Length: 429
Ligand code: FE2
Image 1 (cartoon, rainbow, N blue to C red):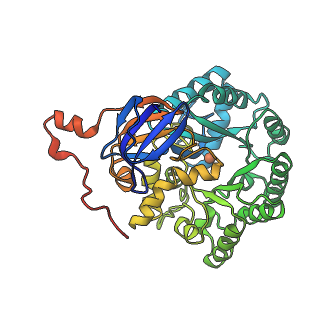
Image 2 (cartoon, rainbow, N blue to C red):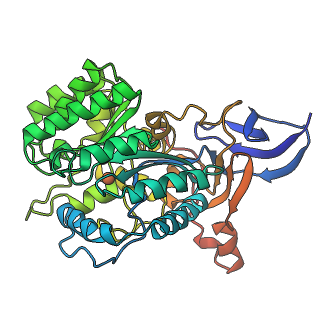
Image 3 (tube, rainbow, N blue to C red):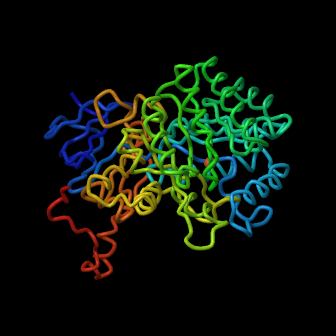
């Protein structure tokens, strides 16, 4: 027996040491001491070998457009939406594709191989939808791209959004989105949640709504989203993105919501970089962090994954497609500092995120898709601390990116003493 590719002596995120054998696009074996020959071997001794990073919340139609046609002066979510509205009529099919493909190259270099992107359905041309469906096909050999039909200007608030959103779903967009807190009234928001969940149930699709992305503690559309998830039998298929109003809610009300979320198996997707940047903008001091209640959700067994949301666009002026940046910020904002919680933050940008997206062939096990990343780190906590170098990225059995070791670069420069890896004994809880 021989393999196409063998990754030798790596450390898996759970601490096991194993070789990973790959044949074609699939993982064939994960066990120590594989001796059968392989056409190509990667030595991962002392390095962390992880399934690829997964971004469960992104906007690929706006990425890399920073400064077009101007920058967001107030830094608020609402100016970002207005600015995107100014850019939308100027978009061309080719420009959206070029920017998205450039971003996908960044993603591959960072070991980010699964992305759920929302796509605006409020442009009557559905130009971004067509462009991203095209991108999805082009990157399919190395990135799993999932599209969410997202009525950015409001499913009811924008006159043609409803028809356009349904048309986008007919065109093959994978997931039903929404933005209830941006509708004209609370009642319109509630109705939008109901109609969109019914549409998802009818079509057999998942739901991922921008829900309550506001500092208003009375924005409670999450309640309706939980209700519809239960009523329509959509358990384990619905995610609430952002849920920032929960940060500001009355504690008693939140204590009622959290068990209901758990009961409906409704997942949460906070976006730490964007939440900490956009929320609390109307506060003086004390200034709210704005991110939703992550530790409390975890304590109720609610599935949580961190998303990146934006890179260089009307809402966010930074970003590098690095999900370890996202985990690093999420860990800080939610104060997830115990060893177990720090490891959880790594899972929230890998396995938990894949689970929310329903990626069944994801993971380091025989029969799964042969996509993985070799990180210059001893374990998931060190990977977050260092935002570790991606020494090798493998997508569907093919080596698609490599990077020089940071340690060897420093050693070459005569500065080996500055190497910051440090684990002698892995931290315990
Ligand atoms: Fe978003």
